[in-house]
Amino acid sequence: MISIYELMKSFEFYEDNINELSNTDFDIFISAFNNEEMVLNVFNKIKSEEKFWLVLPEYKFTTEETSELVNTYFFKEEYNSLIEINCIKNMFEQFNIQDLKNKKVCIDVTGFIKPYMIFLIEYLHEFENMDKISIIYSEPKKYEKKGNTPFSKNILDVRTIRNFTDYSGQQRKNDLTIINVGYDHKLVDKVIGDKKPKNKKVLIGFPSLQPDMYQENIVNLKQSMDLNEDLKEDEFIYASANNPYSTARNISNSVTKYLNNKSSTKIENISLIPLATKAQTLGMILFFIFEKEKYEEKDISLNFTYPFTERYSSSAGVGLSKVNLYEIEFDLISKIDIK
Image (tube, one colour):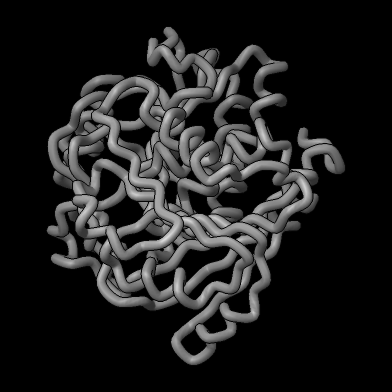
């Protein structure tokens, strides 16, 4: 049987055809500003009726550093439990972005910090009732300091992302945790230390974005002593680091197999923890959106949990290797019955 995720399209742009991005024809394009070449390059090449920059507080930019940007929403709130919902709703209000149902919208998630990205995509689906959106994710040639690249600093809180089931962050008694591990092993340690999951799956990007990145990821995983000491082979999920569709499909298959195992503990909640690439985060979002109703019928809730930090690197990725354009079709939910 064909998976619903296999019906969605994706396109790739490399250095020799990246100029073809100018052939796009969107009504609205939104990107989160940072100093990475891949973010700036794509923003300049994309063709759209309107383009908007979002400046996130974790990057610690000053208004002077962003003064030359046009159509910019500079979000200035300090961390609080509503930060992602306030940011996205305020941005739409400031830019007077509305009536999106019949517009072609593209989001470049490359520069987004994950809670804002997750809430934005759910907002477009749930509140704006969009049938389709386009998502861009660009891949770096390498990370600034390879496996030792610092991505974040000062963990403030571990909680569920707003607008998702059980956002109070209270862990149910029987929880299945799916943690997508990346380079930042301190984030992994913090989440695992807080949740102490008895039932877990570890999602790893394989194949990785670049050949050496898989080994760098594994080295960092081994530094997360709270996670890797007792991992068994059947607790791993592998999916391509730049393929959200295979990520969603492989999570779905793994969870189904786990729940069908009669010796498994009865699960009441599935907690998704995205700590690796934005493409795999998108895959987790698709799994959430397309399958949450199916699990609710089984009295199983789904949520996203994330370790919020004070600071996030604005220049971790170096160069531009490839641009991925994903066409997300939410209207497939009504056309295909997911069992």
